[in-house]
Image 1 (tube, helix red, strand yellow):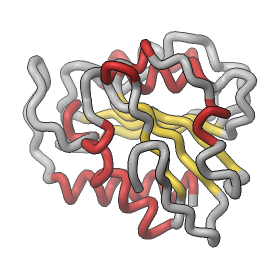
Image 2: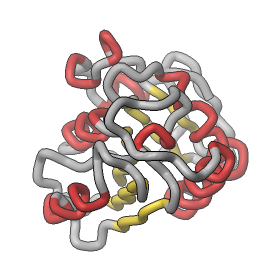
Image 3: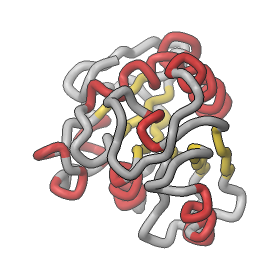
Length: 189
């Protein structure tokens, strides 16, 4: 798994995930946390590299990324923090089957989209709090799945160090990877 341009395509699972990093976070920061779904479930993961590391300056659409892995039949889009907001904006009329949000929520209404949605919050996240995610839940389909990972903070979704204003992390990177792998595997595997 590497940032877009390179991908791992394991033919036993024709599912791919386009993942948009959070604001000012390098794409490589998500490789460890997303590697489990590649290794254990054979999902192809493409991590975008937005302009200036800010997803809102990246106007590419889903098709700009799916062409990097033409053998994939099912696509999901996802992101962390502001990358998740951008992922939400990418979904309409894109042909993706679902949406994955890490410490994020949508700013646009996808409630009637029919998308499969997994929204993962961190218990100790003080930037995209579980309460804020819940307040925006009506913008997602009624059957969206909401999970809160115990001990996780905002920065737990990637490996980029502490973030100003965030809560304390009490789980390990390995525990976070295992939890994310299981959750993503159930959706994408």
